[in-house]
Length: 263
Image (cartoon, rainbow, N blue to C red; front, side, top):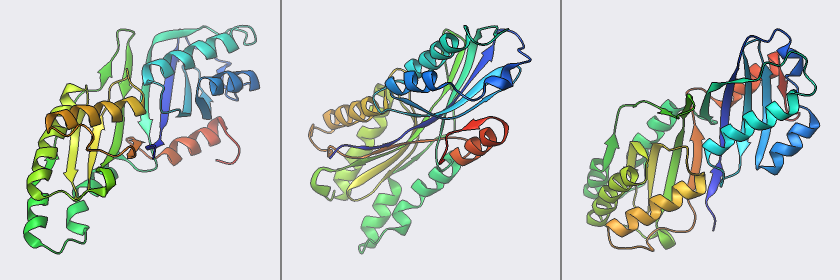
């Protein structure tokens, strides 16, 4: 079973200089929408101001965020240059951040209370699982050489093959392996919580890998560390989260720009 992915991101690209007529072009052209869809990028909303272009997109699981930022800027420049009088082009700086149905704070609280809310009969087993929790304060987002900021967070769920139920000793080994594997694969862990047959993580991930690559790297690296390379199932979950809900971003664009019909 393939992993489930829910990938939504917001991109803000700044114009090289103020562009008073920008708001007229907030509705993407059909040609632009088709070109981006061919790249695995579905535009959900758009909003242009005098100083920036803002887009909310849904992303294919195999596209790294670095490539997404390049495609959005490149496709927009190609689309606007011949038909938008006064279009000044884009500056080098941009912001790309993840969005989701839930915020980072909500996901953090959800991960932290998993063991306490689970139906575990053995109180000692519950106590030992509750000890296998990792919490970290937020660090700085990734900054590219092109003045771009990638602020990328995801809630990841990894499931043991055949829903294998770990002993508390096995869960400790897996927990330690996940912490080390995050760092060796370029992830910054903020929350890790072990359950009897799966693990929850909240991580900041790098812009050089798509969601599917992130999950596979984490599975392979952690499996090697605790000596069971085929431990994790083929499924799992990778969902983007952000500082505010996706709905807020969509509603803001719907009010001041363009939002895909039906959203």
